[in-house]
Image (cartoon, rainbow, N blue to C red; front, side):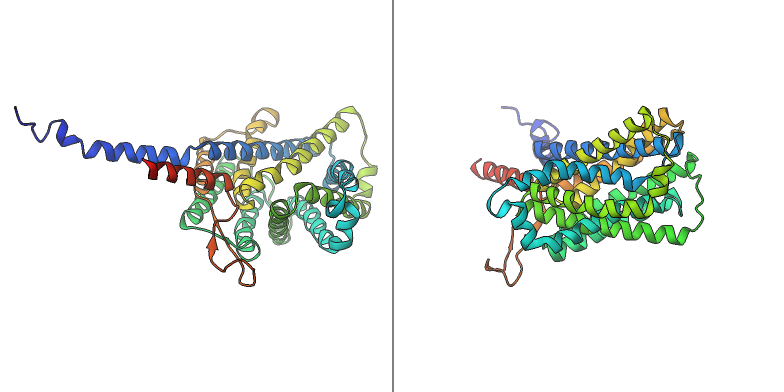
Amino acid sequence: MEAASPAGPSGRQPHEPGSASLLFWIKGKLFTWNILKTIALGQMLSLCICGTAITSQYLAERYKVNTPMLQSFINYCLLFLIYTVMLAFQSGSDNLLYILKKKWWKYILLGLADVEANYLIVRAYQYTTLTSVQLLDCFGIPVLMALSWFILYARYRVIHFIAVAVCLLGVGTMVGADILAGREENTGNNVLIGDILVLLGASLYAVSNVCEEYIVKKLSRREFLGMVGLFGTIISGIQLLIVEYKDIASIHWDWKIALLFVAFALCMFCLYSFMPLVMKVTSATSVNLGILTADLYSLFFGLFLFGYKFSGLYILSFTIIMIGFILYCSTPTRTAEPAESSVPPVTSIGVDNLGLKLEENLQETHSAVL
């Protein structure tokens, strides 16, 4: 028989399986069903946020209506009418009265954090620039990760920090595109106050999201939405009468303005209703990274509605953010049990990205069998 030459098929055999294995690993790691589902859910939340931004901008620019607290109040009322009423008809420890007796003061603080986070971010636009809001709003992500570390005992890997850095790079690219496209029109009349408001609002968002993740994973989604609806309605209603009474009285109501209010309320209600579902299978940090694309969706709609200028950097920004988001979702975080827990004090697999962890275990089992 004629011997095979080194450059023949036998010479390529060691190289080809390695390349195929690498491609198979990348496909199995980054393009699984659970990751694709997480991406789709995250972008659905981004579209809800985009809807609230577009309707708010329409109200402010076309009809000179700037009432963020009224808009939030309507959303909290919807949550109250659906989820709080549902709690009232539950029995046992899920009953509304039982929850109020045991944890009323905790949910007052949670409702206050949620209401004020929404209000402070919107109010900051009156003092500072769009660039400052977009950049400083990202301050909530490291705050969220720190709170998750100490409160939820989340333990991150190196790839998670790399993924967050990539997402923040995408936000920086988006801000640069805004400046080049001429969207940075508001110079702000007191930048320092505006920047402080953004930082406070981002920190309160982080507190609210960590509490939300804990409640939906340890207790129930219905309890979180019902209690936020109850105390959010009370707190926003009181604040509404104090800070926006004159603004509401000056509105010249017609069916277009009413329709925009309804559209905003529905988008916000969908955001609040679906976000706990996404957090239950991922984490608060993952959700916040996924919704970084909301500003880009708002821009794309603004190209047709408000005459924004397009820049290729927006596409680059979207791509960078999505790469960072996929990297973060590709590896599940771990949860370390607290020292005083009855569970042995060892690092165990947590519930963050639970679907990904199950899928990873199935793949490992399949490989072992082969």
